[in-house]
Image (cartoon, rainbow, N blue to C red; front, side, top):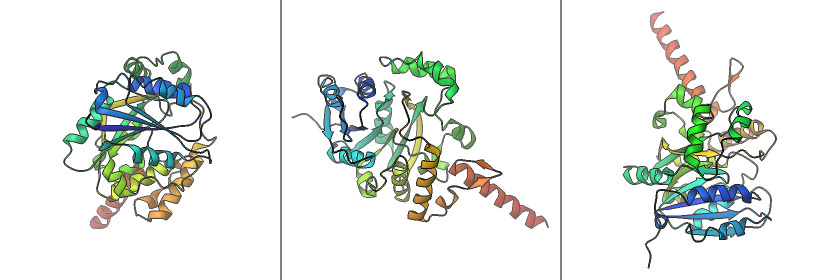
Length: 302
């Protein structure tokens, strides 16, 4: 009898079989041995040939497929099903159309096994929400058969993770960020399965685009999970049409809903404008703290 896997990769999908093929192809090239991980694909009511694509990887991957009835956008439920089916102690969530670098799963596993505390690992996603001006340049360099070479080229093009500006300003040690849950994005992230279950998994009432991942991130944060970033756990995002026309508006609605749900002082900064500019949650908190420190110093010298 074979040993259980060490990592379960959970992938929700919906009518994007070509992108799913790319994602599975990258998983088949991981440095982590095939027997050390499994892949769980949960189809959110799709009607294309995704199941056939999954079947075509049976020889290359330890892979499972589950189809749920189409009742609208239910990515949270799909990930919950995948997590329930998963057998490994660590769960890596990625989206259809995200291609992992060859050492990505090995990096996730190493960081989790070395961790002294329950840990959340945020993956780095090249080409994710990049400047539209880079789209045409990106397209000519995308290679579904060589994620590492594609990532190297995207680095030279400057097609980095949309969160890179936050890393530049706040530092890459996100453990020190006041609200690291704000970048718990399931396009590429991992956590301990037991901690996910303890946190209650995804809130399935989030049935429109955005928010269900950050919502779970809040609960993992409240349960004292350590959040970390390791750029060696990298990937790239294959461009595809957006799920919604206005992602910013959807994100803002979800953020306000999250604050109403938890009423934390950290989440109270969602939706706040400073000098008519939009900042990330963590930057807003940083500015607020700096202003408070300045006011305190001014009061002491008055």
